[in-house]
Image 1 (cartoon, helix red, strand yellow):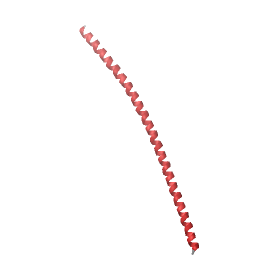
Image 2 (cartoon, one colour):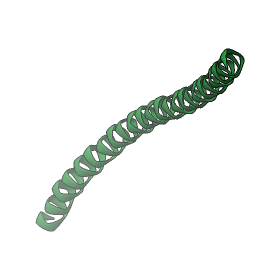
Image 3 (tube, helix red, strand yellow):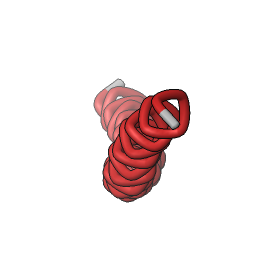
Image 4 (cartoon, rainbow, N blue to C red):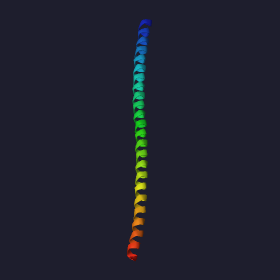
Length: 86
């Protein structure tokens, strides 16, 4: 009777070993997937920062154009006033 008990113990250890290997494989795969997702998120954040910087630069350029247009309109108003007096 001792022999069947020893065989079943070896069988249980073998199944347990396969189970642990399967769980380990799942965890490694899950961690790999998480690392890929994190990398994509970091890259996306980096691109977002680049887009935000570009938008700020564009806004500054537009602000300069608006200020220049305002100055031109003021000068045109002065010229119009002078022409009306003549």
